[in-house]
Image (cartoon, rainbow, N blue to C red; front, side, top):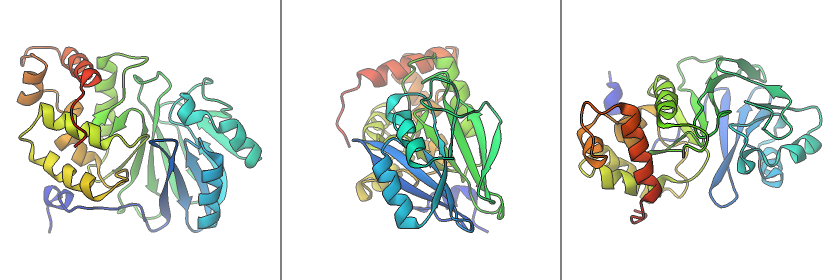
Length: 281
């Protein structure tokens, strides 16, 4: 039997094809991501953060799917700004979101709400306030085959090796939100809202230069222009400094001690990242 730690070190890993569920990445704007979440047997699909309707439509045509829903991670324009056009393009579809600030939202969701796309794609809502107060992460699993790893769409809450800015919250809220995501199975694939991996990697190496896990991430980044969908929740707990607040490198970087409140460490680390101008490794 292969232990989990060893399995998580096998890269590159591309767990976007499941038995009845498929995830298709759609790059939009300069560095945003939208996603098709497809129930393969019914060919019905939802779109996560459908900003660019032309690109969404092209992807749907390529994969031969019927779009039935939009799923928004939060209200910021680069994530929900395409919703009105989405409803015009796909009449009869619905848009899920965490507040009425999400453009054209039809179905408000809250923590632990659940719904299904097609017959087989199960989606659970995880409230993760901080970047915005209406931030929702969506944990998707294959309802037919529970041995397959699920995926989590994290919007601007969790990025590969990073976190979102605290626009509407404070460090303690981001700690709670990242812990919530971190409680998902380690094999859960991470699908973030932006391609920020190179910059996050550079900051991670600046804070935690001897972390071997960051060397693995460096290899992924060098080999892949698009890094979303290649890593897991378990990986984040190994290399994401925002999920490793009690480690010696993070405490040293934030001039903290073991007795410093974690919220203060998180606030200091976020401020340090905001000001970081290191190389894009």
